[in-house]
Image (cartoon, rainbow, N blue to C red; front, side, top):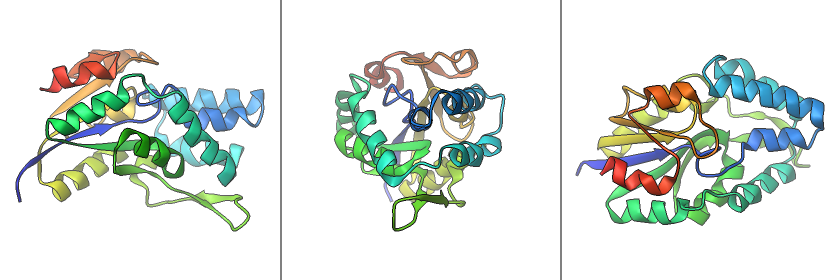
Length: 214
C-alpha cells in the first residue's frame, strides 16, 4: 500500500467559529450556558480531563435531534472563511483530509459535506424515536482524554500514513503531539497560550496551513 499523508482538522473554533456544545447550552438559558461554557473552556485549556465533563454537559442540556441538526447549519453559517478553499488546496496537493473532533457527528456531517471532507471522527449522540436524547456512543474515543491520539493511530494504520498533521485550537489537539509528525495550533477564534507555546506551528487563518506543512 502506497504511503499517504493526512491532515486531521478539529471542528469547533477551528473549521467553524462556534463551539457546538456551547450553542446547544445557550438554548437552555444563561445559567446552563454559563455552566457548560465554563466546563468547555477548562477542558480546552487542559485543566480538566474531557471524560470528567463530557457526560455531565450533555446531561445538563439533553439536546433533541432537531436541535443538534440546527447546530449543523450554524457550523456552516460560521465556517472559517478560507476553510473550503484550503481543504481543496490540500486535497489537490495529495493530502487526505479528515475531521477529528470531540463534537457531535450528526452536527458535523453537514459541514464536512460542505467542505468536501468524507471522513469524520467524532462522537455520535443517541436519540429515541421521538428525537429525545438518550446518551452517546461510549466507544467514541474523542469523548475522552487523549482520544484524538487513539483516532490518529487508527487512521495511520488504515491509510498507511507516513506523515500526519493535527490542526486545532485546544489541549486535546496538542495532546496528539508525539502521535503525529506535526501539530499546528489554530488561534483564529480562541488563542490558548499553552497551544500557542507548545505547538510546532501556530496560525490564525486556515489559509496559512498549506504553507506551514508543505
